[in-house]
Length: 327
Image 1 (tube, rainbow, N blue to C red):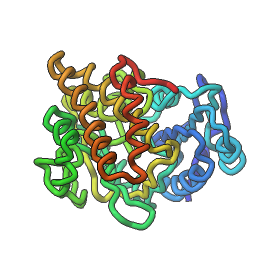
Image 2: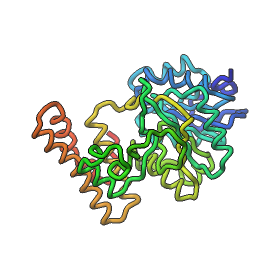
Image 3: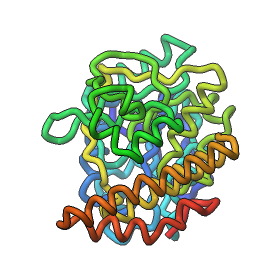
Image 4: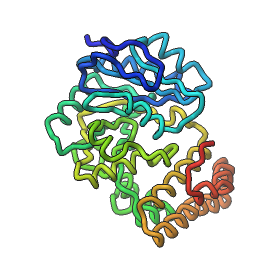
């Protein structure tokens, strides 16, 4: 069975490039306190490998033993250990700049790819040059569908649906749940607006042509922005239902209120980059409304969610700023 790093020395310097790599695919995993997940993720990559792969782990200053686990159990994997948290987008760009493979796979460390996932994804990409980005169908560890593998693009309508809770009331329809593509079980292959960064396979020349990930996105929405720029370049973003993987989700960001603040802040950055001024103002107001309606509802009902929404509302300045906080 092909092994990850069969031809690769262990390297730590960000500028080093592996020698004599014949593989088509390079893989980038960005870790932050992922000691529990990174081992299974890399073992699954090894089982799915169809040839030599250049695998790079960028660790964003983990406080746990993530780096030690990789270096101990996977000596063929390059580790770029950072002294500070660079954020997801910047860490991905750092690793991608060290690759010379035709394809680059950005993969979350809390994923386990199916044994045939890489071969199916690679064959699909190489067979159709119109595909710029390809994603797979994700499952939760219990086997249930994890629909976060792909999304529809953000619009004022989708922001309104989120603010009013219509996306929850009409979760099974694309009319009221457009970003989550409500009602679709991800069971067929089709073009999508957004392929998420949990499994995002892209041609390296396309990635370089569009400028890589926009580092103004510290965490979240960077894949939405990249997918948009790739589609604007004339390439397709494709969800491939036969490319399967388990994605646990929340592997490095587990505090619910803090995560939502980051999600909303990143969404505001996306609005400011791609929308007109009137739409930006409306979209930002709808982010406020999205939180405020939940806060008011939680106060009426009482219960454990009240404190969560109070914490998010107090931090609303985060999505009124021009940059995502790095805190």
